[in-house]
Image (cartoon, rainbow, N blue to C red; front, side, top):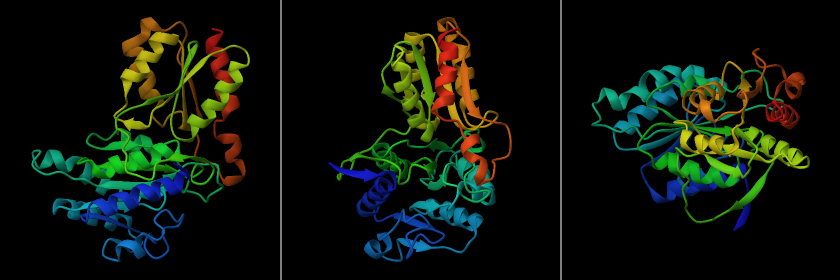
Length: 325
C-alpha cells in the first residue's frame, strides 16, 4: 500500500466513485480547473470532463439547490462548500430541504447528496473559515454527519458517503489535510458511516474524540502510559448517528471517561455523548464524566487560536483528574 496524505486519500476516494458511477458529479467553487482551493479535486476535471467536475458561481444556496434537484433525477451529486463557515449561506438547502426530503416524499425518493466541507483550526485561516459548526447539523434529523481523523478512514468514508442513499455532510479537517500520512489501499474499500473505532486499547480510562482531536488524544494516551495509566481512545468518526454501542462497551471496561472536541463546550457533540453515557451507563461510572472543549467564545483570530484549541496537554490533565477522582 502507498502512503497517502489525508487530502490525497480523499482525492483517491473521489476518483474511485467518479470512475465507478457515471451518475456521480462534483461541483462547487473552483473545484474544476483549479482542483479546489486546497487541490482536493485536482486533475479530476481533466480525467472526467467538464460535465462531471465543474465550477459553479459563488453562491452556496445555489450549489445546494442544484444538488437537491440533481439527486431527484437520478444523479449522485458531491457538492463542495469551500469552508464550513459558508454553510450558513446553504443552511436552508441542507437543513430545511435536503434533510427533510426523504420524509416529505414518503420514502419514495432518495437524496444521495454528499456535501463536502473543510473545517477546523490550527492553520491560521481568516474569520469564518475554521469554525467547528457540526452541532448545527448533528441536531438535524435526516442528515448523516461524518468526519475522518486519518487518511485511511478519509478514503473509505468518502466512498461510503457517496454510495449512501442518505444525504451526508462530510467534514474534512484542514489541519489534517497535509500534516499526516498513512497506508491507504489503491483499490476501493469502504468504512461504515455509522461506526466508531477503538484506535487504542486501554483498561483505566476511556477517551472519546473525533477529527483532529483523536490524534491529540493518542498523544495524551502515550504520556499517560508512562505513569501506567492505560487509556482507551475511541474515534467517533460518525457524529450523527453516534455509535453508542462502542462507547458503552468501553465505559463498562474502564469505568471512567473523558470526551474531547475542538468545538466550544456549548457546541460539538460532546454533550450528547455525555448525556447518552449518563442515561445508559451511570452505574458503570466510578467518576464524573470529564469533558475537554474550547471556551464558549467566538472562534478567535489566528494569533490566538493555538491557545484556544484544546491540545494533548489539556486532555492529559483532564484524564488524570478523572482517573484520580
